[in-house]
Length: 333
Image 1: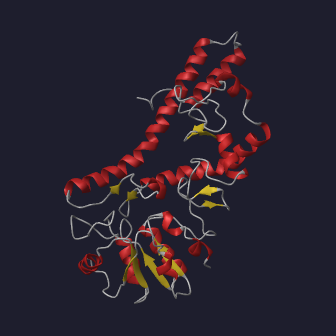
Image 2 (image 1 turned 60 degrees about the vertical axis):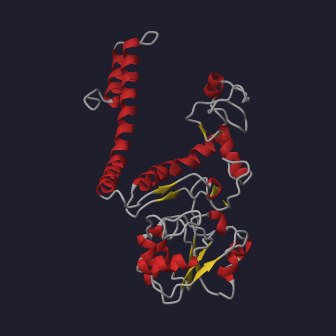
Image 3 (image 1 turned 60 degrees about the horizontal axis):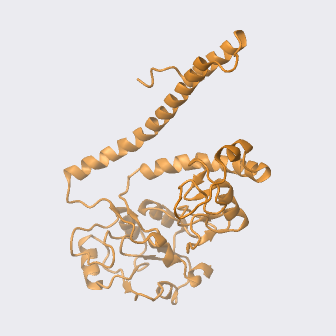
């Protein structure tokens, strides 16, 4: 029914033609109503079109879950937001790609918006209409910027910071705009936070991605050594649990990567203390039997294992960005 309603472009063209022929005195209510209605229809259609592809992909995976309910495909949680380790998804899940396409469009327009806000500031009509409401404990609004404390519509405020203050935090102060105490590394090349912006940077040598992207990266850089984390990286286990308890699986793309690497070049470095269980599970999963398993203690850095006596190109794969932040890893060429 929505698609059958008058198109926004046609309505605007008709309204413009009518205003030229007949004139519009004090604002023709019927014309404004038609344009407003067409705008709402276009908004609803855009949202529906955007949801169709995502829902189609989800339907595929829901059918698979229904067919094999004991198979663990998705693992998600928010226990470690600082490290942004909240998602384990199967290869072929395409919803993330849909967001990436839309983000590319936004990134393309971002520099122009940045120049306008920097040179001209906020449009007067926005400031005059919305005012400057103070953020208080008793009168907190999600659309109030935590930095300048001005109130805007949700279009201009994302994660409690307005666009203008976000630009200042990124490009003038060089820090994450979303969390005042963010411990994630900040990319100086693109002014992005690796965790909060889900960012990757080849120049920083820190790439975010799933198992498929790790496989492609290994083929591209051909590392001399590869170190992989166990929990929520190579395996679906989490919080140091034994892989022999419950139903767990190995990431198929990381398995392919391991099997494609030269013998003796792949290592497991983990905080999971069930080393013997891990080796047993690896044998059952078809992993090569020559892979060393290094267990590090709670306050020990994985860099000690990765860099000890090793030279050449090293690929380190871990679901927690905090594990990549050891200064020795960041300094290593």
